[in-house]
Amino acid sequence: MSLTADKFNQGMTTDQYIDIIKVNKDPFCQIRDGVEIPDDVLDYFNSLENPVNLAVFTSDWCGDAMSTTPVILRLADASDNINLSVFNRDDELDLTNSFLPEHRAGTVPVFVVFDQNMGEVARFVETAISLVPAIDAMDEMVAQAAASVTDEAEGRRQARGRRTAHRVTKAAEWGAVILNEFQQVVADGFARPADQRPAEGGTKWPPED
Image (cartoon, rainbow, N blue to C red; front, side):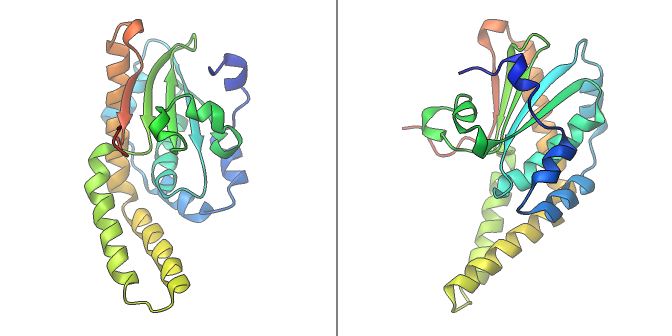
């Protein structure tokens, strides 16, 4: 399955996507507003000879989407050289999975960059790989706090709240990391011959058998 130009043009803008968010809308917007785009990242995209097409497959319930999607949408909206099209992953599961290896089917979010002719340049999956230790540390902190709650359902509720609050607090710090890694994988894609694209970035888990 491929993403055609016609299908790409059916996607949503940032504002249209925000309008349909049912879960985590407030933290999504807080993270988007808390991001500062590094000058070198914005300069890179603004200096491209031709605009790129960026397809975003995301879901509002996903924690990594809460951290990563608003950051990359903020970049896309800041550069006239990025044509953005956002899709609700849950409505486009087969199409989203076509950009993932079989062992990672269902992973979200997925960001796919195309040239002006819809030739695929780069893929960026889930979030920045260098953030994995920080995410693991967050999960450990949340797990320790939840262990003291006797009611299991209440423990899960509090855990979700702590993760969300932590992601919002880290919006600027994590956002800079995400944007730098995203820009690097796009640059890697353009540096490759067309038959060796796409470049791939983002997380690598679970490990391939």
